[in-house]
Length: 153
Image (cartoon, rainbow, N blue to C red; front, side, top):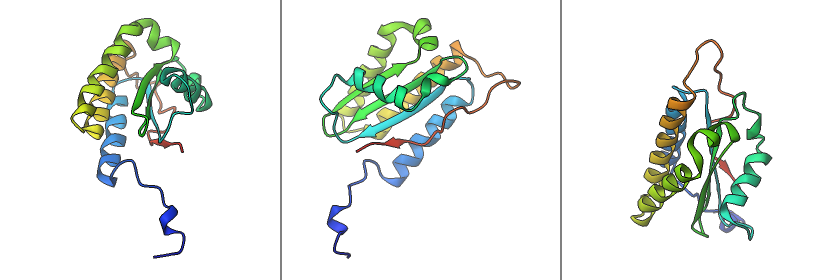
C-alpha cells in the first residue's frame, strides 16, 4: 500500500456495472443516429441539475451531432441528483414531459439501490425513443460521440 493510496477516489460503479452501462449505450445507439452520453460526478456545484446537465452537454460539444439528437444523462452521486438533457432535435419531438417521466422511472430504480440497472434501463428507454424518431441509416450514420462514461470530480 503506497503512501498516497488513501487519496484514491472510490469508484462510482464496479467494473462489471460500468461495462454493462457502456454496453447499454452501444446497444441503444445501434438502431438510431442519436447519441447518448453519461456524465457522473460526485457533487453538483451549486446549481439546478438540469442546468448542470445543459452546461456539461455544451462542454462536451454534444450539440455538434448532425441531427441535433444527442442526449446527456447527468448524475451527481453524493448529491443524489440527476437530469436528462436532450438536444433541440430530439427535444422538439418528445417534449419536456418525456424527460421528466424518464427521470422518474430512474428515481424509482435508484430508490431500491438499483443504480446501474436504473441507468441501463433509462439508456435503453431513451435509445428506443431515438430509434423511433431518428432511425439508423446505414449510408449516413456514424458513432459521433464516445460511448464511454465521462467522470467528473
